[in-house]
Length: 138
Image (cartoon, rainbow, N blue to C red; front, side):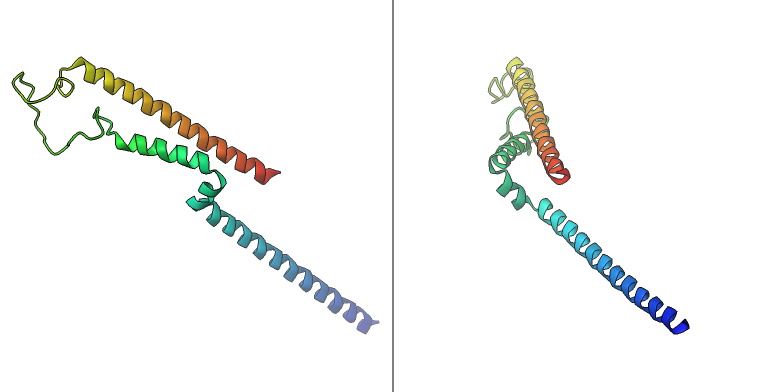
């Protein structure tokens, strides 16, 4: 009777060890899958392949925003000269003059365009993330 009990306990121990090993393998596979998915989703090429039109639009918006300095009204304005002569005899054109009203309006319009494009870009990114999360849940 003692031998039978010992045999049953050893068999049960072996089954539990096998089950534990299987659980460990499943856990390792799950961790590897999550790791691979995170690596692939953080790769810009994934997003470009999955959403080519949105990627181009986003890149264009970011490029547009980067091309303008927040304080300047022109993307090609030189920042090398520190002093600006505001006298009427200077070689500045009216649109470059600091007192020009057109420059202020242009800056305000560009600022609003930047805000709108940034909002569109953020909305699009949020929408893409929401779609990915819904796909994961389903």
